Image 1 (cartoon, rainbow, N blue to C red):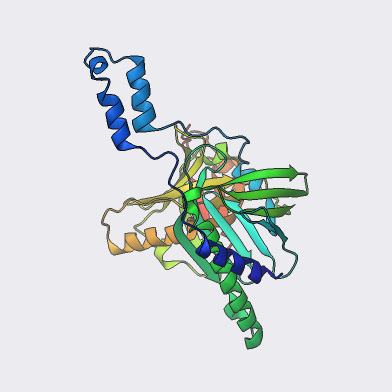
Image 2: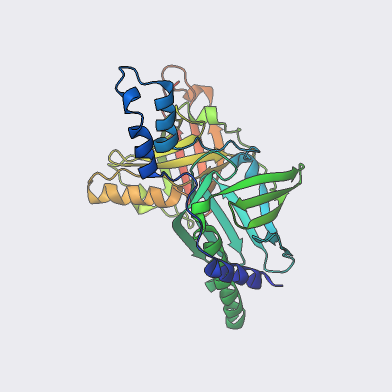
Length: 367
């Protein structure tokens, strides 16, 4: 069976499925009110009893999130492999191997799933929702990068285009329209070169992937670490497009673009933030062992700014969010150290889309 037919069956299966049962954590409001009303004598006491608090938690707040039966692999681990779909398991446990071209590949990035099929890339944004084996939820925010127009053979283009339409429908129906159930990753096996991974949808299908370790790009520059990035504030000093021409929106003399890398106190994720002095944009990020920077999707403040500043904000958002880039780091000689004795660095960011951004660290360290 071809990949297109598999995803077409996914589409038809979703559309013909019976309505899902109600959420198990939903609150029975009348019963909750009745239960608490029957304990009015206890509630009249100055200090509510443990029984009342327990009933309030059980009936109104709901049960605690389920504890996971296995650990979710980290984004760094997941992104060490390029994953190819090899099998689909439906709700009845029927297994269908995927053994034909064009293959469907997946990359897992910070709050993004990126799928590759022939000349199309599909990006789905997701968020952490709860604990348990299915902690992620896909949003309805879906985007498509289509490079099929590069085909010179019109017949070949038509074939790939029609095939990709079915893959797109299958992915959207599988991930978006069942997003209320959540999904999770289970790493079944891993070696330095090959791994297998389940993408499991709560109460639904399982997509089995085989991963091959990504090659490490050779680099003669310094290694980049989370601690190093977070030690400085970074200022953009050069921005050129894939033809080495200045990017107009990021080359205004009176607008400085700054970057910060940081952690939030309430979780263990790393975040990147960019600002032009008016609004800020940013999202979670990870670094791989070969100086690859992956930035996820995030929020943006919405204050009114002048047109040039807003254009700079929009451009840096379009370049950085949901991006993949190669970093290289170079250090100035000791003679070029700034006042205070701190070293000066240039951090070069080569984006997969072809642009090159160069950042210079501020002299004083942040920590």
